[in-house]
Image 1 (cartoon, rainbow, N blue to C red):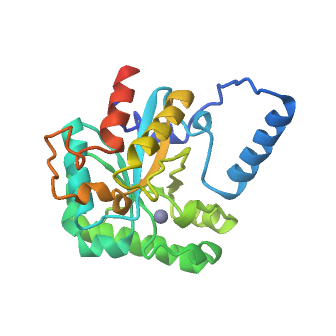
Image 2 (image 1 turned 30 degrees about the vertical axis):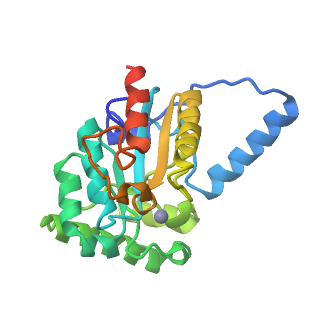
Length: 252
Ligand SMILES: [Zn+2]
């Protein structure tokens, strides 16, 4: 893993299919194929081998932020681990915490558009979706103080992939930022998060990489009072980043 960022954003869409796997039975094989096709058709979830990241590369993506407190701590951990990630931000929180967006940019993270208000309904109206995306870009550009700034990637709210999304992305000259794995950061608490990280890591190990979706605001354990970005043993420091970084480095 080159930290956790793909070699180039270009590589995200130019992947080649080069994977074979053994199914335990034909029935399982077809069931898996069916589910994968359904998911690939209606959502941005894709197979690792189809999204263009290199084998052995992990991209950690953090959605719905920035969160005023957690994102700053997350950025500390990413910096400490020398890891670049992707932040799929929404316009509304960007206007609340523009300094965090400046920090994401200055520290080399990929900033992707996740809509202004995270409106899934906008995905079914061309005009509403265009507005969602353009207003989010405007919020980011304002935060960065670069009027001409626009994001290259968009990740639709809830990961839904509709014909409207496809059309609007062409109009706005953007590409979708896909997902290959769920990062299992939902419903975590200090007693369960180790298990969820282990499940995430097992998936990464099995598929030799992937694009994982996590959420700034759900990394709650970083809000514990013992937070210390330099202490790997403090529960506040732990999370997906150090473990994903260690796994990625083990492949280099
Ligand atoms: Zn989201």
